[in-house]
Length: 198
Image (tube, rainbow, N blue to C red; front, side):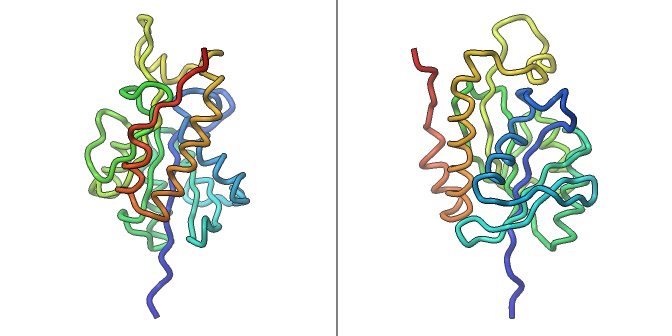
């Protein structure tokens, strides 16, 4: 009998309460939301990764949050993937993206890292970029902050008003990618824009 196919869903972020609500932790936020909705306990630790195992719509998944800080996310994720014999083609990575406005999501199958150090670390660890990504728009600062200050900053009060909807939409996008494939996810979500109500 062929081995059961398991999907690995990795959210990127930084460990610790100081980073919990920052833009850079959007990937962690989506993973936490998926875990809550689908009753998957993130209570296991291995290879410097916090993870949980369960199912989404009948598909066996592992939800994971690397605990080695964003820029070194790759090695823990790769070791977890190897342990469960998961290939990069069955990996979905969720991460923040400053090149997308807040309220925008973009699913991408394969490709480069576009300067995102967490994705760059994953590509280096897996030796290739043939995995799917769900990019969560966090926008760029209108003020003269450095990029690092912006992504490591908390969401502003007006941004928080739509954050729950962004996370819920990202969860729906993950389910679509799992059940219907990346292309259907792109068709359905890449043109979506969640707006702050006036």
